[in-house]
Length: 96
Image (tube, rainbow, N blue to C red):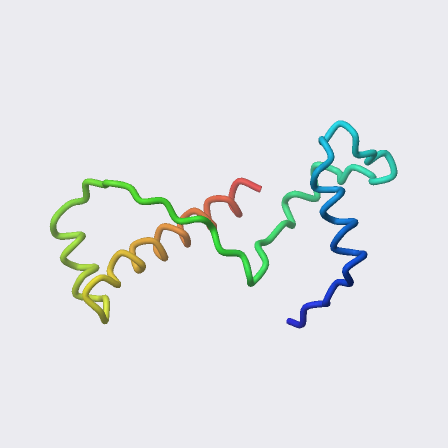
């Protein structure tokens, strides 16, 4: 994906918009999307959710299994996250 380089004038315009309070920005010319359109929404390939550190109690045999599957020492956590992400994505599809 290529990125467009913005001119100094465009950057200045964006900075001015970002500094304005929400209530001062007129969005009347932007139509609302119908609610049924949300069922077709998909994350783009560049989407990276913000990770959050948590303490989570899991069954020992479950953790051991993921550790055996992971190629690296700490990669089992990424695999657990991948499995949970798949579960959540499928649940969202079913509920749409």
